[in-house]
Image (cartoon, rainbow, N blue to C red; front, top):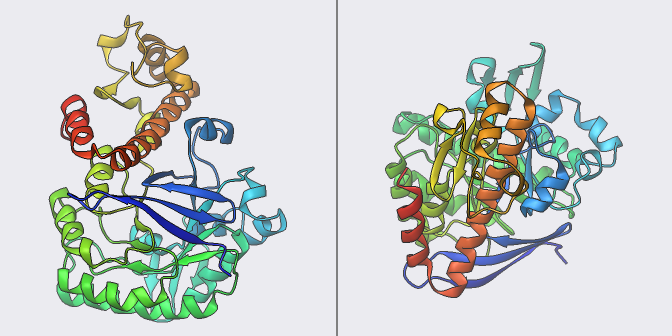
Length: 371
């Protein structure tokens, strides 16, 4: 009996937006859901205690980076990622497939796997689909992603087809290597910006998807409208009985537009990254607190937010912290941005269940602005 299952609670009749529950060994995940990214087994600048207060249900860590440092065996000997990082809720690990794409200058892709030059010390590492699964098994996350090859935006049809076909061959190897019933393997749909390749990839991927799948190769430099077009085209072709995870996508507008196109799960480093540079996402739009106009603004960051940052600190104080390089500034803004994105997904879920999704989206954009 699988320890993973998905319940579709409500589907919006106009858009097909979905509210559901994904059951995992470490707890239930209400979808749509935004997953904060803790690449190195920590969400930068945010304590696990604060993540829980923010309402985070699941976080994401990265297989490649944890393999490089501290090493997956060290994590395994600590009792797995949950104990290692003191997080008792669900965890998802990316397979390292995205690093095949993002660290292209440091790797050499072969049919058997990828030869990486470590971004830490330059040492050579050969990661096969089997090796990626072994590392993910050692890390012990609830949801593990298959090892894939993501082709860059602008790749021609032949190159995109080649990467998609290799992803499917690697998926078969991942599937055969994976044996741990405590972990759910999510395969990944690829195909670049070619709709027929996306259809082929989905059709060939679905047999490997037991309780969820990823949608990769989007938000990699293409115009947002192109991504939305692909999502709209594919929406009615996805299985309905499992969550759909749009990988690496997590700006407020992309979360909304993704949900409107039937997406259930999102992740992105954007919220904490821009926080460290002094930018907040608020119900009134983006606020760049380092700007001079906030030097004597003693109002809270976001009047509609009840996070620790907004309850206790003014824009003037946050501006002071950011402009003096104090780490607390980035930490407080990270707490706020994570809370904002978590709440956005939760409020979209409420709107789907309550039957007022259209009104919610119009009101959000009216205040936040189109991005």
